[in-house]
Length: 210
Image (cartoon, rainbow, N blue to C red):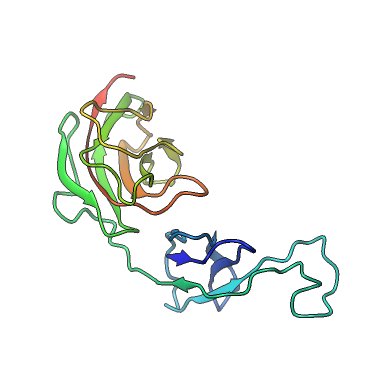
């Protein structure tokens, strides 16, 4: 989780594997708290955190600390590293087709809940969900995605988020059950660039058909 005062200048936080130099996750700092990742710790258990303004490839050599005022950010920032439990905290992590999953929430900020279920390979299913209270902070996003657990491929819900509670359920679209028969429903805070990490209670179900 990363936060800066905002402009002028937007430093990045980059999580690296110190053994290989590989980037594990990154995010651009803004005036509210944003999530970096999530990412899995490398085998060594060590992570390098870098906070800096990125230097574009079109810049030449630098002859001072700010590269001739190309780097504009000077000021405080804060970050925290949170261990994410991907299992739901209050209900079972598996569910049956047609059952409504209730009593769970994205909490605290940065939480992720993952649920597993199965279907007939090639069958079309559709998730339906809603928030049972408005997301906090106001205007923050809560996202539901359906993923193939075997490949990590997104099956439904990419970039589809809710902000406020409503009595009716909403669907991010149908998906086809992958060849292995299993699918994963993931609920998390955060949608696309520029949104704050939120918390909210929710409920969902998956039914047959588009």
